[in-house]
Image (cartoon, rainbow, N blue to C red; front, side):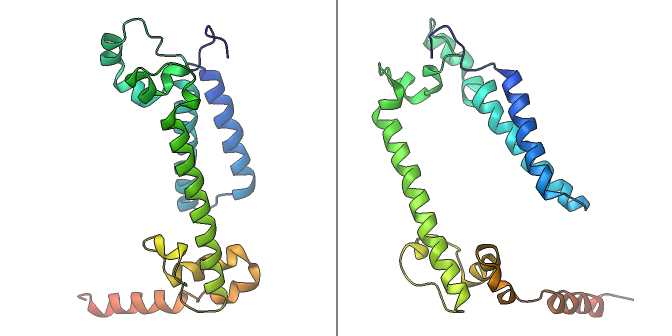
Length: 184
């Protein structure tokens, strides 16, 4: 990347990428109900915010732009290197991608993927055999329960579609209990 090329303010790229990803998701989701459209709208808003942060203008730099302009008077706030804010604030020189903070964050991200992959395997295996999650990586994720694994098993393996209980009896019982306790 050349120093003269801006890294932010590329609004056409925001619009193009958002449109491509939204239409791609729309091509296989086919929302029908109002609830489906609301969920799809939330996903679309996430994509627009993601690409605005990546190519438009980062919110952190926008919120701190007055202070950053006073603290770093000659700094180009739209440069890619200034987008790595901790390195810029600490005054580190050189490639920000090779800084200790950047390398540490990459290691944390890789560790998160490994933890998620091992926990997903344990959760889907426990759902298929109707047993509790075994101790290990899956126990490190708070809130991961056997019932969550049972609901995710059909997504991981369609052969386990019968493992998910039918919710209709529970819904009918809840509606009947609500009617019984309501005044006439």
